[in-house]
Image (cartoon, rainbow, N blue to C red; front, side, top):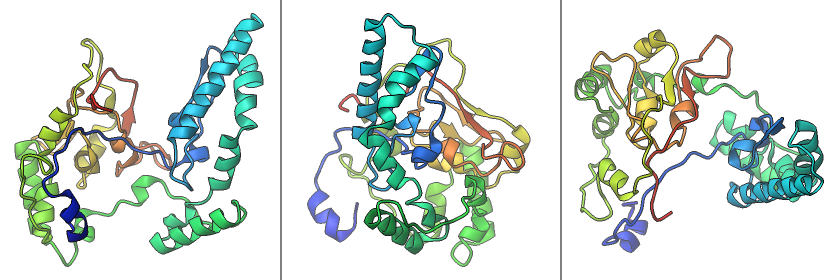
Length: 298
């Protein structure tokens, strides 16, 4: 934002609203069971996102319309919302629509990023020009195999001693290591102006609030405390968009404040440990939850 090319346009501006989300890159590969007896899924969580175009809103709305049309048809025919009936209406129409056609083209478009950035961009170009016939193939690795140790990542820039000091300070203050490590790596400090450049907590307050109802359990769970104890990267803390996940004083299982959670699921997609050996699931479990921070403007 403070790059000279951008800052000359942004300087003096005021942040009016704030929010965050994660865009599930799986697309069709992340498609769950879309219909069943008494339920149906729509939107980005149903695998409708087009990862070649980076688009998801139109696709999500379209799947919602398709489900509504299917349900109206079943109601008119006085049929139950069974898996079979939903497949014959909603799912049939979805499979025949432009959403399905475009997502088949995009299905393998981003595989090249598993090698490196350049091959990823080349793969997207190939998929786009050939309507998905060609791409850069890759063996996709689970997320935890992509995460290096902090010592390896900052090798030559930040010493292990500085990293360990930042880790201890984060545990003692229930914060993250982000600012300390960025400072140590030589990044200039951001001088807050109270309008556009503000603290994370101020941004959260600007976002408004959808009150989380009382009496519900935490929806973010850390499955194996032993793995959290061994984890030195704590990516879940560094990635948390709402600062809902913070370090514990013992450096083990992170603390979670569900009132701050904005349900972006960044923790779920960026955990450094597998739930079980060979599993695609991580040590973070993200369940249905109540409320969260959202923008009252959006």
